[in-house]
Length: 67
Image (cartoon, rainbow, N blue to C red; front, side, top):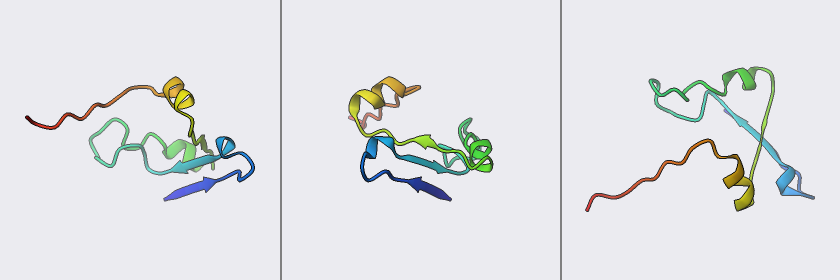
């Protein structure tokens, strides 16, 4: 499920939420991390600016193709 609230006057003020979590893999630690927020009808900010994204990212995953 996915909810999105877009402020068309200022897209940087938009919100979203999805359940169950950030990961789709059942054994991943982030599989169900958004369920509590979803049940509270909570949302998180939708970040569009690179500086905002860089400032709020908890970690980085870098995918490197095989040689």
